[in-house]
Length: 212
Length: 124
Image (cartoon, rainbow over all chains, first blue to last red; front, side):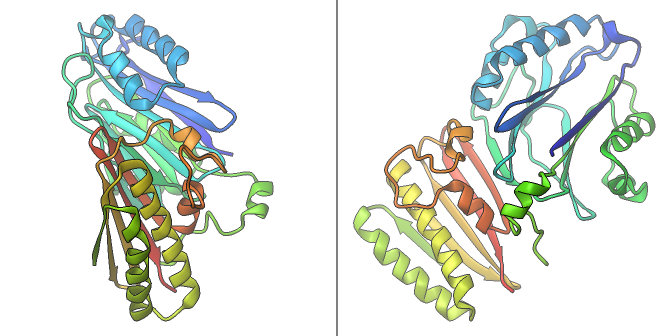
């Protein structure tokens, strides 16, 4: 199974929290999104975050770049601007498809090695790159992808030092939100790539990490 | 080595050159065959979807790195592309899912200007 867990800690309260995450379980893939509406944690952007969640729930089947464009062109988000990460995690093919624009960090964790996944600069609603890159990355069993908004001070060395790879994803996300703080709303969403044992029996070699 | 794909007639010639290159660079036939299969799929995809493009092959510290680039329309509806047996146009190939599985690492970037796919195959 592919697992998701999102931990969130509003800077003040739910009404002022612009951070949100959406996960939708479909037959072939999971749709996964993390967003952060601008507002520095002291403006009432919670309603805007709920509106964006609803828009994603209605349109998640669109190609990711078109979905980003749809949100960018929606007048609702021009007032505040937002950061957005959109992804599909495929179930039968070990693959994540993703894009991200704005001040958000995405880390890939595999066997004790953490790498940063590329996103683009910009503010959705204000100004986004003229060319939006959709990226693909092969996944292996037990790979994790960590997405954190800018309220979280995400340090790769600290993640390894705290031995978070060996904890469950819920403990990992909760620990990051609790201990890696900046002065803003904090959200950390973690995905762990697992497959069912029956599928692995049929395809025994496809998730084995190479030796080097 | 860099190979340019710009016409259907040079696909076979490019594959023959790649086969020679792999034969000179690595000893295991099964690995040669796997990499050649991946190359064949990448080259056919370039030709079918973009008309022309390039494939770069290099070896480094027990790994083979393949980089395929084209200026085609980019990925659209990836969820359909990676479904087993799905093909947007007639293809000789084994499909994107098989490429992903045969690769030890795969990263790709797609936008309105084209596609870049980077594949790593670790040699045993």
